[in-house]
Image (cartoon, rainbow, N blue to C red):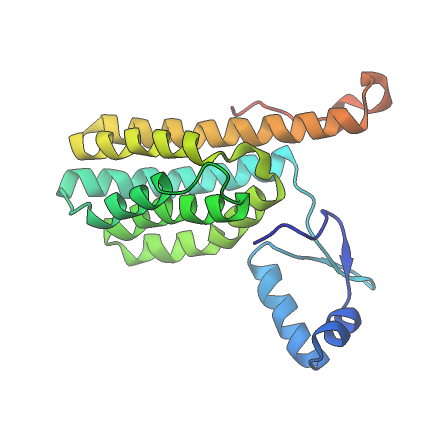
Length: 214
């Protein structure tokens, strides 16, 4: 995902059908799928729009992923599953150049976390995680200034080492990684909000992003 569409931007079936030269029935089906993935929101009598990314949405999504990934990690270390795919995907991240496009960094990084779910071997966990993968990529493509290839590479090198060691340390390392991502995203949202309202009095306090869960 390139994150080219702005948050809150309105999209209509007519405009998409015309630009892509497809029928509106096809577009309507695509809209329904994107809405189920959290990538579009229905606006009554106005078509659809790109969701607004705020602290509440980030916290809800990160709580969901943390529950699933931490559960998967416990299974991996308890059953001593082979870590081959996790090792390869971590190396893929380490091999990225420092100036790799943010969208590529986000995609390669996400594959590491997807592999943790896959390595658990629990199909229901995989199905549950699949429901948030696209939204995770959308979030990081929308706020792409927090993803640095070198920094992420080192973080996940340490995560891999902790996973090899096993035990609670592996779960703790994963939790720390996910929470760092949450904090960075919330900080980016906060800075973006403040840049649009440089004086605290411009915006009501209840409208500012909250970092309660960081």
